Amino acid sequence: MTTQRMESVGRELQQEIAEIIRTEIDDPRIGFLTITGVDLSPDLRHARVYYSVLGDEQQKLDSGRGIRRAARFIRGRLAERLNLRYTPTLRFLIDETPERAQRIEQLLRQEAEELELDEEREEDVT
Image 1 (cartoon, helix red, strand yellow):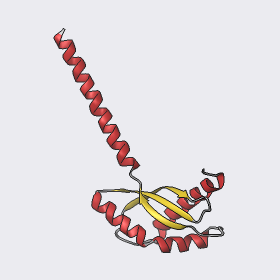
Image 2 (cartoon, helix red, strand yellow; image 1 turned 30 degrees about the vertical axis):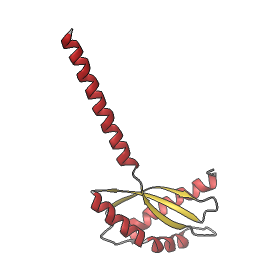
Image 3 (cartoon, rainbow, N blue to C red; image 1 turned 135 degrees about the vertical axis):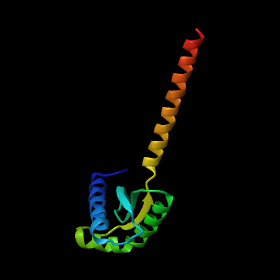
Image 4 (spheres, helix red, strand yellow; image 1 turned 120 degrees about the vertical axis):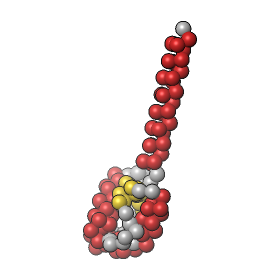
């Protein structure tokens, strides 16, 4: 069950983490990385931070390594910036939703093209 407080803190964490990555982390492994969401535990002590990376598989792996290596640094900066009793531990996970959505869209497009071809064939037969 997600509470309003969890959602509010999650949004704030998402914005602050993105800002810290953009302005304070200088790791060449981290490419064009976007924080796509944050899920918090009910006690607000643990956060799953979802990110996506623009690029190929190697760039995704490199960015993942870089962001996980910077997790303690990011948590420390969050402790300075946010007024929370406990700064949540951060677990970074790649968000594969964009890739899944693109694959589903591609499959739907293929299916539509096949249906169109079937209809054309039926018209040619009659």
